[in-house]
Amino acid sequence: MDKKQKFRISALIYGLIFLITSAPVFCGYIPEGGDMALWMGRIQEIEQSLAQGSMSWFPTPAWTAAWGGGAEAFDCGIWLLPLAAAWLLGMGEQIAYCLFMGLVQLGTMAAARWMMGAFSEKTAVVLWGTLFYMGCPWHIYVCFDKADLGQALVWALVPGFIGGMARLCRSRGRNRAARCVSAAFYAGIWYADARWGVIVGGCAVLYLLLWERRGRSFLSVTLSMAAGGALAMPSVLYLTRYLIKGGMQVWNLPLGCIMENGYAPGLFLTTWVYRPDLPGMGIGYMGGILLLAWLCFRGEGGKMDGSVKRVLLLSGILTAASLQYFPWDLVQRLGAPFLRFVGLLETPGIFWGAANMLLAVPAGWAVGELRKKKDCLRQWVLPLLLLCAVLATALYMCNTLTYVRPPLGRDIVSPVVY
Image (cartoon, rainbow, N blue to C red):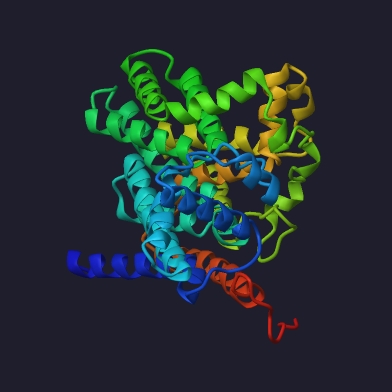
């Protein structure tokens, strides 16, 4: 198979990944359910402020009280500005939303591909890693089931930050382009969802303290994150002020214990369906992780690059933090800032989402190792089965949502009966 044929096949697979994992976008309407009405109200608020010659950078108390968007109170409106501007200029709400989400999904796939390229130059590793990231049930849940635009943007931005950070560590801090890119993406994460700014920054610091405590890598990544924080200073200060000083009672921000909303171990293994707000791995992602475990059991884990091993270990820490047994109530007792921040998370499941972002890297590596085998079963059949499993899970989730979610503001004419 020559290079042109490989390029065409890869382009076809990437096209399928985008079309299937973005299927609700092509319905041409804004679906009801999840937090969609909340976000539409927020965009209308920005649109009205623009019409008055100002800009509503953060949600007002009136919006938060009306929609109950306490956890989204620290999401900056800068990413929603194009949507609000399009509405103000007369573009239809439905078309503007579909175009926006389509671009977000396309950007997510490009960022995931760039992230995987930082860990491996092999085409198969990059392709299947991108597949696992895009087809991850948590990703589809955030974008279309929960319909959280802030977290959907985070899923598009985190791979860019990870890719820049990985390239910085690999080059010992000498890659200036990676430094600038990671800083820009980190700032973007803060503006999209300030909670994730803290989570991603905390994970990066933990990674550095565990494995990059010495050398130029530590300094370069730290400076890059500091630059990103400086670029996102309005969001950083807005959240920090609340965490330290409190107040904002009018917003009715969550302060309760989140442990009961976490995962039980069995919930990680759910495939086609899942409990509310607790999506599992899905059959395809689970297959990739089982393949990784099988390779390690056979003694081939030693071939794994050190950076991939570290990502795998960090994802294990995040998985533990997502359990309902993790002592988040004790963390909240450390002080008022911890009480307020943990309350804003609403669920420990957010850490399972972060773990899923990272698990795409070792799962992609596992498929790349399998593709090295010379027999047809391991080189072609098993990778194709994983491809079909990931896309089938994504298609089932997206197709189900299009059937049970009517257009926003309209009633179902004839409900689907299963």
